[in-house]
Amino acid sequence: MKTFSFKIDALTGEEYLEVYIRGRQLLTDPLLNKGSGFTREERLAFGLDGYLRSGHSSMEVQVERSLEAYRRKPDALERYIFLSGLLDRSEPLFYRLLCDNLTEMVPIVYTPTVGQACLELSHIQRRFRGLYVSPDNIGRIDEIFQSISRPHVYLIVVTDGERILGLGDLGSDGMGIPVGKVSLYVAAGGLHPAVCLPMCLDIGTNNERLLADPLYLGYRHRRLEGEAYEEIVERFVLGVKRNFPDALLQWEDFAKNKALQNLARYRERILSFNDDIQGTGAAALAALMTAMRIKKSSFDEQRFVVVGMGQAGSGICYMIRSMLRQSGLSEEEACRRLFALDVQGLLLEDDPALEPQQKMYAQPRAAVEGWRLESASRVGLSDVVKNAKPTVLIGVTAQRGLFSAEILEAVARNTDRPVVMALSNPTSQTECTPEELARATDGRGLLATGSPFPPLQWNGRTIKTSQGNNLFIFPGVGLGALVSKAPKVTDGMFLAATRAVSAMVTADEEQQGLLLPDMEAIREVSARVATAVAIEARDTGLGRLLPDAELDALVRKAQWEPRFSPYRPGAVSLR
Image (cartoon, rainbow, N blue to C red; front, side, top):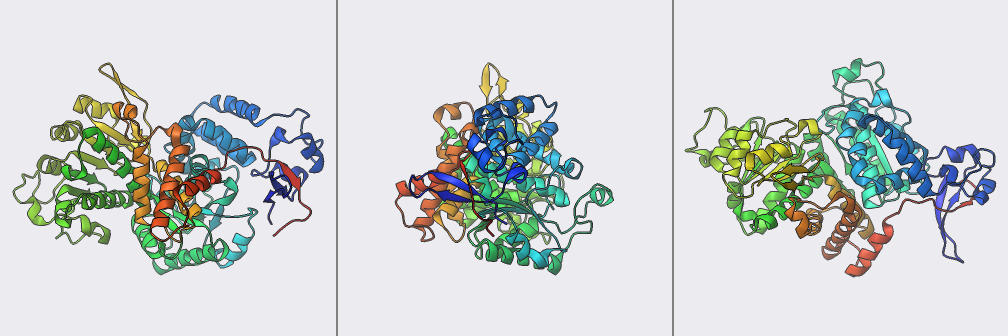
């Protein structure tokens, strides 16, 4: 049952919402509830007289009141719970508060606090958000999709909860991730919350703690695997295509092999991408582009080490290799500059345990002949750093302190400005901290981290650390793909996004060590990324045939500003 529709007055051109619910029901709908912001006319028209105190509060006053309450909370998890409650009461107010305080609140609504929230979600659950698809209800997926109250759905963020951040299998408690990603799509990208839908494929968990927890709210069975799992995913995707044919589907926090399989299987069939693979790779590449400007160097002059070949590491390697090839290097030459390590150490071609996506990054055995190794049976990180002499070190391992002082000092001996990316989330699992890098490199290192760190005072200067956050990429890519009406998301669109992001880092920011733009500029970052993606879609025959300026204007018009829209009563309920 639709609760409202977007309308434009044919006479005045005024944009308004035609609303089909009344009274108490209106006050409990988070997309429509204005709280004390309902005007006198709206209170009378919608049967709200007597339900509200007489005072009227503008959006600005309600933001002030909410911020005061938020800052009284004693810790990050309590602030997360407060913001979740606000989101459940009034989405326009929540997003206005978030947009006005992005730097302060993004670490609460997303990493690192969302990780702690997912660990405890069944214990702190207040209201359910989004949709849960399980083996028990997959047969009714059309009925479920048709029952939602939103007028349109243009974005779906879905997880199966198997690989939540660096925390592993959290089952349907992983729903905190799609909810958080939708919040970022709205706050950073500007999509209207009414067109966004978080979803969870609740197909079980192998987490013994959850299975034994009487408060766990998910499907209390072992995870579906193999054909049974694939059938659920296929029926889900077909349901999306039938019911939301214009929607973008973002895959989020799936286990590595399933994430790669789903991306390969569906990227040509439905408008979709995987943020953990493509978004992470693009964000890392944007930071590396900026680092090359600071170093006054180029990609083909660097030697890269990437540790952790899950989906994030695979995505980063893919983007680096693409840039090395664009620099004019052959496949063989690019391979000699990119060293990938996973649990078995350096990936080597003759390793029978190599996974399919790892083979393209494996070194020939001849490449390590003559290396002095700590163990003849394994080529570890220390071996690679000592022998390959990298200038760029990237970690996506969820192993706190993996980049030891010895490792960092060794990298610093290879270049004046070593580049380190410690991208694991949350903060407790980062490979190194800004202070550890500064101490090992005497402040010469350039760093991006997965979670935010405060500025560091070092020898009389301030060193800032960029958060290598997919937030700089995915909202703009999604918005650009939707505005351009592209049928698929391509690698070229992600390359266009990386260039747009890196170009926004100013010379002053580079002097402070920043590799990515300031978080406060995220709306402008998303707009420029979306325009770049739309232009790339057009130029490759996939998007609308409009001039650059018109595409940019469409992107900016599509960016919703959180506000209380005017309401008019609808005569009938719509389905």
